[in-house]
Image 1 (cartoon, one colour):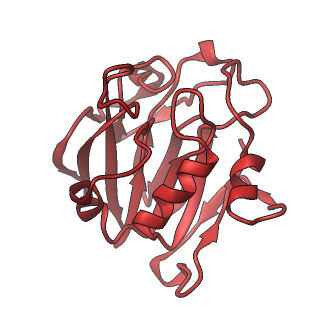
Image 2: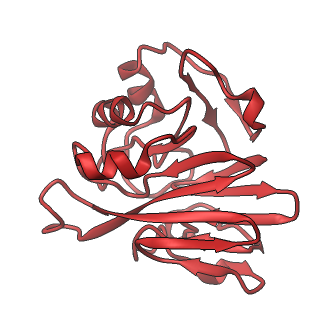
Length: 212
């Protein structure tokens, strides 16, 4: 499995010839949208920095909410959540996705705004190996809250997303705020993450910071 980050909450997850994209964004955010064939596209909520389905070619399965989906050996479960900490009264709903490929479970939190997951949500996310978690604050959880959410889920590997990077026109904290909350002084960045189930950390959780 190869994971590539495009900025915000957009990842390309590829297993062999099968390609899944999460939360493709519009160029209005200042970054270059992904251009690729896709088999599956997940959309956590209908905001322009997460829902640019038109950027991707082919005839992908578009997953846009809670439920269970399967295509080309990829299993996707959408879990209802809120985009704010006031039960959706400010920014509405958000969908958390659990994606299973090659026996690896990936959790993508989208633009989660809850300061704490419910027991039911934790149960549905249980067993996630890799967690893609927003950390930039403003329209989603910040670094401090992200650490609390990570502790609820207990993944084996964490990939922060949705934070300030060069070119991004939206307001957000940098990843350093999250790393400080995690007790990590500095972290080398990678442009791709190639991983197999046997490579996942067995004991201590690891954080992987990616660049575009």
